[in-house]
Image 1 (cartoon, rainbow, N blue to C red):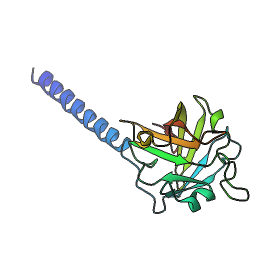
Image 2: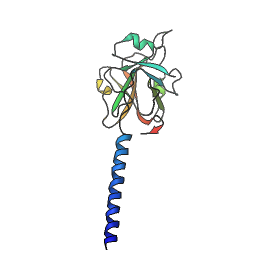
Image 3: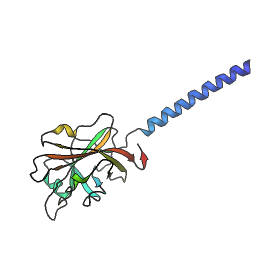
Length: 182
């Protein structure tokens, strides 16, 4: 009888220990990455021939100097290393010849559900997003820059053609971080 009671107690202790280990591992896996010292990102979109490791600078939406150098991560929106974020990136459809912005997001309208978007931070960490949504909004609809509860997404924005009167937004959800499925 004592042996049976001792064996039962040992099973309970082992079960509690395994649960604690599992909880600790879950907490570690979902912890956000630390922010890099330099917040500049690199953006690659395989389906967009001009978007191959282009620099993405964090700046205010009206910072034309940074926007003309490639694309901008809108200041005040999320980062890929955050658990819940909307990494909001704007680029020119046409831009200016002989600048990093020239035609950079020209073919943003060709992205479809399931296409990949890649971001890399200055620490070399890679973030893979999968397109899930496309929409056209008026230029004053700032709600598209807000995070989506419980998700880490990237939003790519450019003006609509031919008159630039609206904004084309393509959104992707984080599916891999540093090679690990999230």
